Image (cartoon, rainbow, N blue to C red; front, top):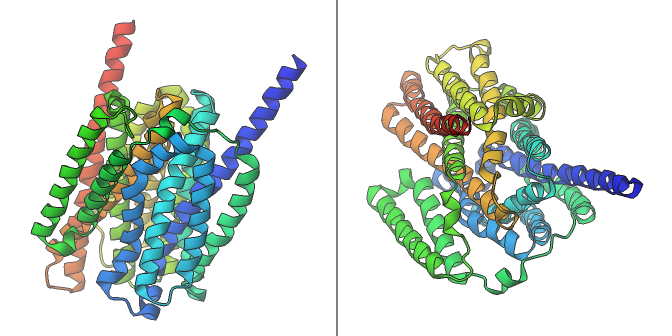
Length: 471
């Protein structure tokens, strides 16, 4: 009894230490993404980049992240989660540093693309380590909600930290993550146990499936990100090519003895709903954030630091996600909590519709705080819903699917919001025309949240039906 008790306490200690390391990694990813956004004006000024090339500092990361995520998630299952996490954390560290050393725009874009690829392999490996280290139920739910809250905290704090570092030099936006990544790497080597790999699956690695799905995702994300720049015909061409490659991938997976993605995983309705919900939530949130930054900086003349501080209220989810959300999930279940989060998000964005040229921060604050609460009620529970009931051998795949949905949703939200904003503003760049454009584009996040409410309601209905049958 004593030995077993000691073993349990030791395992619990290791698990929570491991969670601390993995939370550090997702914090790193969140802060890295948000710091870049506020540093873009300084980057353009020093490297002489055009607006079109400047957007690729962000888009290249999204392209690498979204394009390789499914491959990264499955690679974690096949070749070992620890190995994938440590290897690609090292790549992340190296190329973040190279980004800070860039002297030409193309160097920075290439560095961001490879950094995005490294995140595509590192993030699902880290998430699947959590889902396989904590037993399904309250312990795993708490771990995932802490993980989600940390990711949100990294994103929120990155807005402020990025503003501060940009005042010194935009290069510190890249050097800062290098220091943090090195510390996390040292801790990860010590605390993450070797999970091994599935030898039979690894020997039958589905190379054709990997190539086709990665090509499909790259073209899909590229088509979405560049929709406003390529024109209708090129956008349709990219999306059609993506659909063709995706069809080829499905055929390959049906015939493969060791498929990269077991298509039967999509029979889990909760997984499909969670991924659709993640796509819509990410699209609404990043679309809202993009419009808010434009409103505050371009129309109101706020500095990057002032903008970051204004958005800091959204970071309340870093407090609520590990404290309030677990209690709500235990009391009501995942789906009702997600439903409540989407409802709050829709209200928050709707409250921002009447923005004016002289709005005070007090008028903006309800939207900021409600958005943070909505994030805490939605992000973590969606993560739980997307991995619940999935076998240990496919946790990396499920994590990759979820992160792909978040990234694609973010790219789609930004693309649609940008297109609507440009169309609504037209050639008139007067303050009132810009304001009208922001107001019109704000309908996109609201619509995405309402779609999220509808999809989640389907899950509520099924949950009620199951409860009725069981009783």
